Image 1 (cartoon, helix red, strand yellow):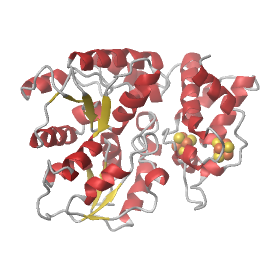
Image 2 (tube, helix red, strand yellow):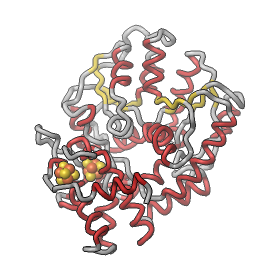
Image 3 (tube, protein in one colour):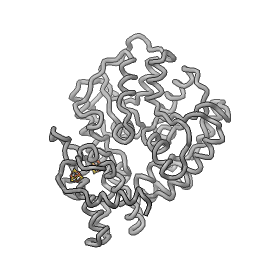
Image 4 (tube, protein in one colour):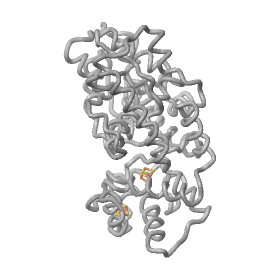
Length: 378
Ligand code: SF4
Ligand code: SF4
C-alpha cells in the first residue's frame, strides 16, 4: 500500500456520520446530486464511506447490489467542501478507490466497459473514428510549437464548436500552437476505477506532447485539465510543463490586450456554471469571472456558485450509466440559472455544456462554453 492509499485507508475511520456532507454548510441547501436524487444513505458520501469501511474491516462483502451506489456518484466533490473533518479532501479518492475494487471484484458496469473498449480501440470514448492529427493537417499546423492545444474528446468529437472557437481564439491572438495525435486523456477511465487503462493513454499523450517540444498545454476541457495537471503526476506521467485551462488563457488574452472585445452585441444577461473539475477539483473560480468581466455582457451569479456550485450531473461516468440522474441534476442547475433571468448559461467544460444542453427544455435561451462567447465577442 503506497502512502496515498494509506491516508485513504486511515480516513475511512475518520467519518463520524455527522451528515454535514448532505447539505451546503449552514445554508441547508442540497449538496449531493446522487443523495438528493435517490434519497438513501448509501447514495451520499457518508454511506459510501460506510460501505468502504465495512469492506475494509470485513463486515460486508462485495455483491452486485453495491454497484449502483458505488457508481451512481458524479464525483463532484461537493461532499468534500461541506465536510468539516480533517483530510476531507480524500472523500472522492475513497469513492474512486472503491470503484477500482468493484471493477476488480465484479467487473465494470456495461456502459463503462464499452467506454473503455472505445478508448482502447479508437482512442476516444465515443466510438468515433480517431482524427486528432488529421485536424492538425487540415489546419496546416506545424509538428512543433510553443503551445499544444489538447482538445479533449467531447470538444473534438461532439461539441466541435468549442474546439473551433478555441482554435479561432489562439489564431486571433497570434499564438504559436499545434495539435498532437492526442488520445483520450484518461479521465473517464480514472473516474470509473480503470486506472491501468488510463496509464496507457497517459503514456501515449506524454510521448506525443514531449515530441512537440512545447512549453505549455492549453485545454478547453475541465476534465482534461484536472487529469493532465493532477492525475498524470499520480500516474507517473507528469508532463513537466505548464498546463492551463482555456478560461485562464482567455483571461490572460483579454486582460493583457491581445484580444479586443467588440462593442456590446446581442448577448444579454449571462450567468456562469462552475464545472466541478475546474472549480472544486482545481480551485479555478476567478479567471472565468474575470474573462466575463472583460466582455460587454451583463453578469449575474447563481445563488449556488464557486465551491458550493450545484453539479451539472454528467461526470464520474454517470451520464453513460445513470442518464436519469444526469438529467435530473442538470435540470436542477438549469432551474437555478433560470431564476437569475439570464439569457445565456456559460460554462467552461464541453461535458457540462453537453449535459446542460441535453436537459434544457426552454429553461434558458442559450447554453454556451466561455470560449464560444469570447470568440463571438472579439
Ligand atoms: S463525510 Fe464528513 S460530513 Fe459526511 S458524514 Fe462523514 S464526517 Fe460527516
Ligand atoms: S462526490 Fe458529489 S455526488 Fe458523489 S457523494 Fe460527494 S457530493 Fe454526492
